[in-house]
Structure formats: structure tokens, C-alpha cells
Length: 159
Image 1 (cartoon, rainbow, N blue to C red):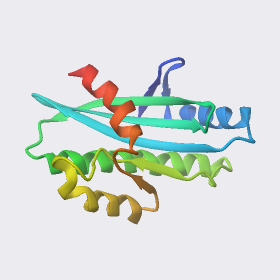
Image 2 (image 1 turned 45 degrees about the vertical axis):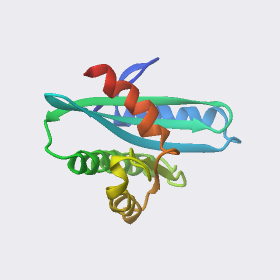
Image 3 (image 1 turned 90 degrees about the horizontal axis):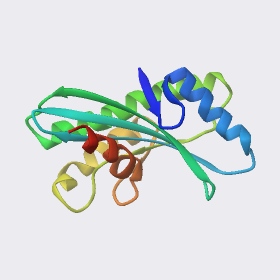
Image 4 (image 1 turned 180 degrees about the horizontal axis):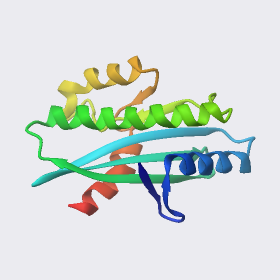
């Protein structure tokens, strides 16, 4: 699984986790958020983008993204559940890697591209419970910038 960092280029998950750890070690006294979010855009096929953000509170962030395509899906619900599933898959893999390196204290937030308003309100509870049930911290719009801003930027660019 390859991700792209706009500054450092392509990296696999192991390299990405090493880069996150390096970023954290540069300023160990700061607070950090590790955020994962996926967004999608649909046309003749579906473009999914998963973003990983390591945010140093008040002092900037680094992000990484992965873009991949799937056949067209028939429903918005199916796309939203797949977005959550892709984010959870990446979160589990990252947690496994950083835990082995002694960074298992970092909470991982999953940013979901759903909100109380709009077409996704009917499936909000379902995907929030799905994420919480897996042991991660779910965030929804307007607080889900990992999905609604970072991943969204690269999913629209690809269509």
C-alpha cells in the first residue's frame, strides 16, 4: 500500500509511520492528533482517497494520501460504508506498526464524511458506531476535516 506525501513523495506504510514518529520526536512536548479519513467521488467509477494527518496542535501538520479507484457503486450508503471501512483498515495497520515501535499511546481519530445535515444523516449513527466499535475515535462533519478537506481535495482532483 503506497501513500504520497506532497514533500517527500511515495512511501509505504512502514516508511509513513517512521515519518510520523520522526515528526513527533522533533517536538516531544507538543500534543498530537493522528487522523485518518477517506472521501470518494463518483463518476463512471469511484475515486477513493484515504488521508493520514499527523497534527501538531498549534504548530502545523504533515499529511499523506492514497488514491485508488473502484467500480461504480449503486448507493451513497455503500460508498460511505466503504469509506469508513478503508479508513479502519489503514488505522488498524498503522496502529499495529506504531505499537511495535512504542507509540501505542497515540489515539487515532477516524474522520467520517457524514453529518447531521444532508444526504448522509441517515447513516451517520451506523458508521460512527462501526468506528467506535473498532476502538477508534469517530469524528463527523463539521469536525471531520481529515475526510471533508484533505481527502476531498485529492478525490476531486482525480475525477
